[in-house]
Image 1 (tube, protein in one colour):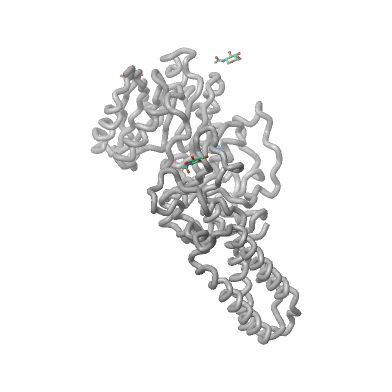
Image 2 (cartoon, helix red, strand yellow):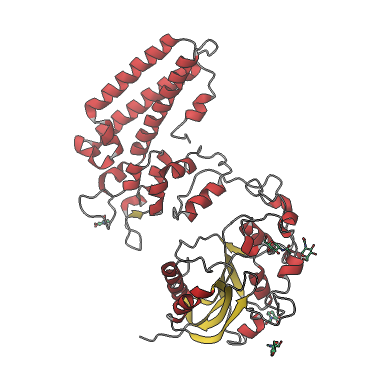
Length: 464
Ligand SMILES: *[C@@H]1O[C@H](CO)[C@@H](O)[C@H](O)[C@H]1NC(C)=O
Ligand SMILES: *[C@@H]1O[C@H](CO)[C@@H](O)[C@H](O)[C@H]1NC(C)=O
Ligand SMILES: *[C@@H]1O[C@H](CO)[C@@H](O)[C@H](O)[C@H]1NC(C)=O
Ligand SMILES: *[C@@H]1O[C@H](CO)[C@@H](O)[C@H](O)[C@H]1NC(C)=O
Ligand SMILES: *[C@@H]1O[C@H](CO)[C@@H](O)[C@H](O)[C@H]1NC(C)=O
């Protein structure tokens, strides 16, 4: 398939031989555009819903569009065949622009041609009568974004069993504020390998462009990917370095991460890659953070599971984590998926390489679970004293939504400034859960200004 903006392909042409050719091409181009505008303005090509009102005969449009496409394609082929040695740089750049322009027009025409139905009668079911149904298609210039957000009518023109006449793909509203970045993200050659740009994708997601559009290029894989360790080894062994793409990280190996050498980036999980020492005892042996004190904000997995013996089977860990909670829970026959993003370290890959399920999810997103389904939500080192109270509220209500009646919410070592504690506790109280465990302990490392809070709470049934 052709990428609509083929500037990069054209760049690889070696040039053309004379400026006479350029002038000639421009004349042809002006001719083409003039022919076009007899039928419809260029704008009407873009905003397709007025398109057909110019014609009564669909076939007439089709034939004209086909002819135009053929003419432009022929023109482009001729450009490509020109001898290239003696072109001056001005004429070369003119030709490049001209070629890119032609390619764009062909892309637009082909998208119109591909789906005449789209133009005619698919409207978003919820849009007001005169309102545009697919504004993103007008706002963004990169053809791939426009194609993505356009309503895709069902083939055979039938409603599907859910009563929808088409498929309605969407992008986050914040994408509009990051037009330039999103267009960069969506500028690729269809069917080719994508840029190494997961960091751009994550940046977009964190800033609210979430969900991101899908892409039609192949994401990059680690060059020397080797199979993961077998499941009986993978849980407690640092994965192979070559199974991760390290280009965007300060550390270039798991050993570096485990040695706590990255500095900032994921300070809350600075020791998470030290599986043998730091991670191994968590939630199965009491860990006293301060030597010489028996203070701890940790609960142990067995004591939490004993609240509801045999009832806790599936759950979510929303934490900055390498998956250790899920790894431990697995030993208790509880299936946990771990939601985390790659903030400063390859957390998602690490979790998967350990043999666990990573959920790549930002705090911006509604959880992808149905109401009243999970037995447990565990969270640590993620929602802490940085979080806005209103945001915390929305998050807690969403967690409540997916927890089943009688499900457990395990707030694990939430920390905040002492003076904020009451306000945060208020937020946790107002969901009116039954308290099984509830403790506040001083956090001694920051001049005694912070506190830890941990709790295990049970969602009440609400039979109304
Ligand atoms: C969907 O198609 C049906 C006919 O198949 C039509 O009656 C209905 O109005 C259409 N709905 C929308 C929202 O376009
Ligand atoms: C993990 O931490 C322990 C103690 O802090 C240290 O001795 C060990 O070398 C660390 N492991 C790795 C892989 O860095
Ligand atoms: C790891 O780094 C953090 C933050 O830089 C520091 O507080 C912690 O003591 C370090 N841990 C080890 C074992 O060096
Ligand atoms: C912790 O230590 C204090 C004294 O150092 C003691 O009074 C208290 O009972 C201990 N608590 C636990 C849970 O062991
Ligand atoms: C988990 O399940 C296995 C197989 O069903 C069983 O042998 C084992 O005792 C279970 N472990 C726990 C902690 O319940």
